[in-house]
Length: 125
Image 1: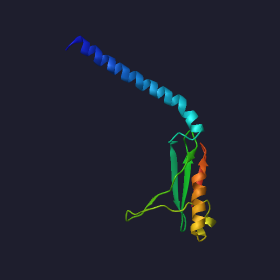
Image 2: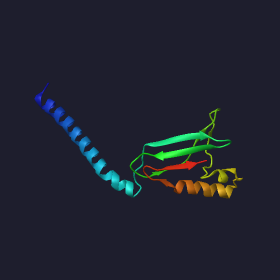
Image 3: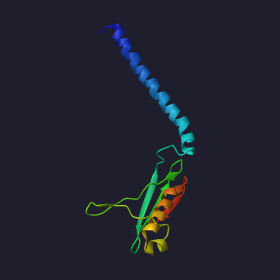
Image 4: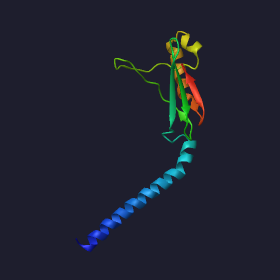
């Protein structure tokens, strides 16, 4: 092999390594700033505990991450494989009430607006 080719390969690998290190360094520096303004796309890890009550499933979502978590939806997969998106309620009394379409939209908006702070939890029925 030609010495120039070997030098070019080594230089290419060195540049790729340097770019990778710089990318990681910038990500670690900028993530806290992005998190403050809501631009960070992942918060992880979230732990979800499900408990079956009489006729409801109670979900407890615990944020173990460093930033606030904002949820988008709750998806339920039925035995037949059908996907459903139930209306999350903050209490059993809300869940027992007959949910009108207008109230359903308000509950969904409230769910989307809530944030779970680091180290805290939210319960939904």
